[in-house]
Picture (cartoon, rainbow, N blue to C red):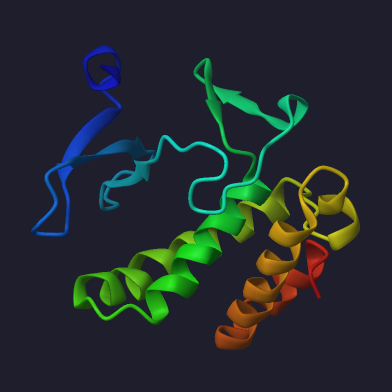
Length: 159
């Protein structure tokens, strides 16, 4: 298991009290004096949770492991944020605001910093039309909910 071969990975108990599984997490770098943080690692397959098929030439690697391209990761994070906004379970709603919004902001900052292009034209070159349009709607919804992010969305080609 990855937690045995790399100490940056660890398991946590699910926030859902009825869940019988643990979540895989990865330690994020932090500055001295900063709170330690981690992010959940999801092993996902296309067609599950509306994950689009990613062409092989767009798959990136990190420590020799395949990782999701940032635009698709943004799509999935926005989908989760949007779904959790209407969720009735309180642990999901609080997580939505506390974690999802922060993650989306950081991901948007990272995409902008790397010169990423989230414009419809760029994304349609390698992603399905339905995935791109669903994500663009959520990006606009997020920008409306958090107007301070509009400049970053504009810089990466969304608005």
